Each structure stands twice: as structure tokens, then as C-alpha cells.
Length: 121
Image (cartoon, rainbow, N blue to C red):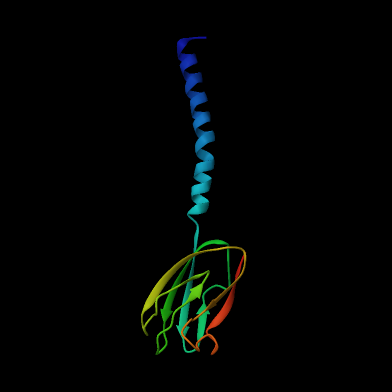
């Protein structure tokens, strides 16, 4: 075999080996980069979510208060700060499969209807 063919064979082996290492990393990165966004509208005394079902993993909730009094939004063990009327907040959580309850933690608000359940697949 000529020196050129040996060098080309060595390069080909190196490319295949590199692809074998990088492909799983690229797949893991693309899965990790998937974030679901849900828009949430809060008002007296309800929440309206743009999605009723989300895939498990990272979810960003964009909460806007269209009511006349302050509200917050709690899900997955995290909550937004108190959101004044006309203002918004973003909440990032990682959700597991199952049903996730959400609510407003301002006293009396959940009891008045500011609560629900999100399905996580």
C-alpha cells in the first residue's frame, strides 16, 4: 500500500472514531436544549394556560397579570414573586411525568379558583 493510501485510511479511521464520540454528545445536547414555553394569564380569580399538556423536562412559564390585584404562580416547587397588575414574570422549572398542580399562593386566591393541574407527559 502506498504512503498516501495509508494516510487516507488513517484519516478515515480518525473521522469515524470522532463521529462515534461526538454523535451521542450532540444528541444529548439537542435533547437538553428543548424547552417548552407556556404562557399564563392571571386575573381574578383564575389562570389561563396556553397549553394543558407539556412534555416532561424544562418548562418556562411566562406569567402576565391581567387582573386588578397582585398574584403569583406556583408549580413544581417554585413560584414567581408577587406580580403587580399589568406586570409579568418568568418561571423556569423542570417537571417530571405526571400531574403537576399549580396555584396562586396569595391567601384565599387558590380557594377562589386560582388553581389547576397541568398534565406532564
